[in-house]
Length: 142
Image (tube, rainbow, N blue to C red; front, side, top):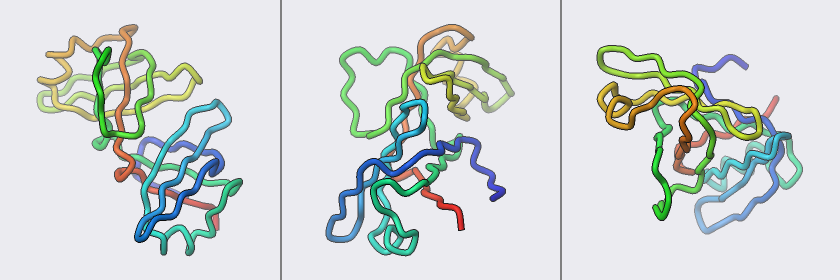
């Protein structure tokens, strides 16, 4: 599988909760990172998803928000992955940010240059990758 999404979380489905139209599922990586996704029930059926199914959660870097001061902040986003900034590459319009998670995994985010500057992003500072469950794409091997 060749894809353009920079964030690929490989693991197994550890929870699956069907609703009237959509299903909420959780994928847990071998390192313990948990990614929650919301997909249609039809997609869950066509992918053959059930608890224990090997699957990958895909997230485009442009769908990842970066938060540096999250104490006391309440969010509706289901995926908040804490870590530390590993690398920031500044461009004139955008910045590419890499966050290393405590599991050793990484998350890539593309944010505006101004946001990266205002947040004071630099290697070593604590940051959280924030991803809405509706921005996660699920893949299984054919």
